[in-house]
Figure (cartoon, rainbow, N blue to C red):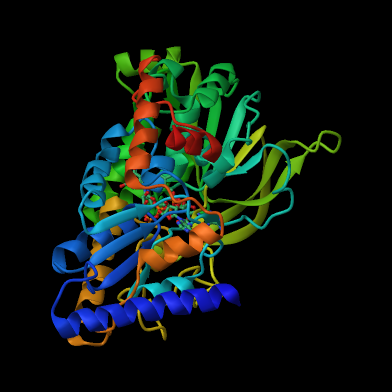
Length: 488
Ligand SMILES: Cc1cc2nc3c(=O)[nH]c(=O)nc-3n(C[C@H](O)[C@H](O)[C@H](O)COP(=O)(O)OP(=O)(O)OC[C@H]3O[C@@H](n4cnc5c(N)ncnc54)[C@H](O)[C@@H]3O)c2cc1C
Ligand SMILES: NC(=O)c1ccc[n+]([C@@H]2O[C@H](COP(=O)([O-])OP(=O)(O)OC[C@H]3O[C@@H](n4cnc5c(N)ncnc54)[C@H](OP(=O)(O)O)[C@@H]3O)[C@@H](O)[C@H]2O)c1
């Protein structure tokens, strides 16, 4: 109650001051410009902020981030052996360093501060907090030791603090990955890449050590539909095909009728399928055959299979295999549906990674949430039925699309917001306190935000730590460690 009174007094004082300043024409407070806050500092958050700052010369944008470090999945999702993808960080850094943009890391929105409080402090709130949950398979045995979600597995090798206890047991020969999207291929590549290659990346040291001890020799990447419906893209498939010390092992029968169907397929899928067909069915040239013969590890797609049950050892409660339903397809092309045939098949394995997609979760009960689609219901980024509330990125569209797709949908949201200011639909005539009141609230709650220059201290510490071992950086693996560096 006291807190609410304090907040209202602060807000009233600020509003009065701005009115007085406007009346006298004197600049007493810095400004009464549109104040916008963005929740989440992944690509969606940064691209939304970038467009807002560019389109409205008077807009001030504050970005609130749960972790002390920015950039979302660019840091914690993108594979360590794809450093070129992370160059977008340079653009995000330029945005963060603009005088009209501020970063507040280490602030868990929905817990440390509510959306309602942000709405009171800002003219508009943009939710860009991504998709932090994962879709579950919904089959018995999913909880057994040795079964992981892609989200946790990727978080583990990329240094996400909440995943550092995962310690996956890689002492088995065969790993099964469910799902055939690019995340599944990232994981397969990390499991099978020679450690000497990974040593030069920013993969975490505990992961490198676990991969050095790994006994995994065989990775099966399983899809419920067929080759013509596979979700990965050609660049990622090509990387698998050319992965040193590995050979592809496919089932020729999975490709029956595929070549004949190719003529009606759009070009990107056609090229992808041709590469799959070549890999699966063509007799390799002498050099390639020799390479394949020498390879100590293998990988392969298995199609038309859905998980039915993860099989466990009753004593150790560890995974020992997976039961798969055999499917047939109904319909054609991208929209074909997997239908059970009634047949099942057991595959022996000691590691199961479910890579069937990420999922957004609600963070505040006051925000509408479509649980079926797992998105915030919106119209061009305007959250339905709540004026002044917007969303962008994976929270807006669902968890698909590369960074460029996320950039476009975030620019669209920013455009909607600017349109609303310009048309008067969003009232920015009354001044708002912005970060001033939120900082006061956070201080009272014992939350210490991390600024962008604080992040730069962490960044420098990580790069310095990495230098010693010839890596671009050695990531700090706990929030406590990150905050310790900030305080030095
Ligand atoms: C494993 C993986 C690999 C990928 N690799 C590539 C690639 O190589 N190339 C490519 O183009 N695309 C890649 N993508 C896709 C790309 O990462 C996404 O398009 C993009 O990150 C989505 O951006 P976003 O901002 O919506 O979500 P995110 O990147 O997830 O950002 C959300 C941010 O919100 C923060 N947040 C969450 N909850 C809160 C809260 N309560 N309060 C405050 N902040 C919060 C999170 O910490 C995070 O920083 C990959 C995706 C995955 C999953
Ligand atoms: N290098 C890169 O550019 C890169 C790297 C990683 C991720 N990304 C992007 O990030 C996005 C997310 O990637 P993602 O791999 O998580 O998702 P995705 O591309 O949507 O793939 C999900 C996979 O899971 C399968 N699946 C979904 N539900 C299932 C179920 N209930 N049972 C069995 N299988 C199921 C899907 O099969 P169906 O098709 O049958 O549904 C599909 O094979 C994608 O847009 C991806 O391109 C890009």
